Image (cartoon, rainbow, N blue to C red):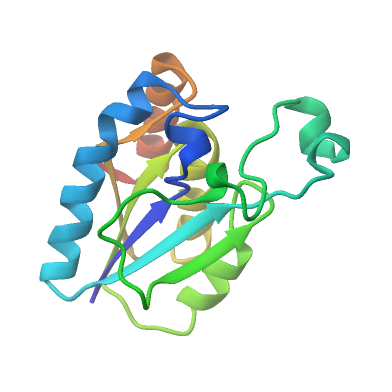
Length: 169
């Protein structure tokens, strides 16, 4: 089985408080990738950056003082309309999802693909957690379905993952 992990494709990262033109540009590519995995009946998992009204007082909020992905706001929502009702979603309060890793340990898979936002923060965090937990699994990042905080940091994150034996396509 193949798995697609769609990382934090949420309004605030696309065109909201932390959105970028690069993030907006990858949305059609991500939709296409999701449809491919759905057609092949592969597993699709979503992560959602999840914060609360007290975000600005948290350690992350003190370093990044921009409210984003506040639970139950429009910025927290995933706008992609191809998402199935029975989707698997992991809400995470930090960059990488330990709960995702715990879940992956309960299933058999051959390879795992990652797409989403932001390449240089949450994508790289989840990819490297996956590599640490599953060193012998094939891990693939589709660079056309990712965007970073900046073009430069996106490329740096891709280079970091490549150095860690992640397949970048």
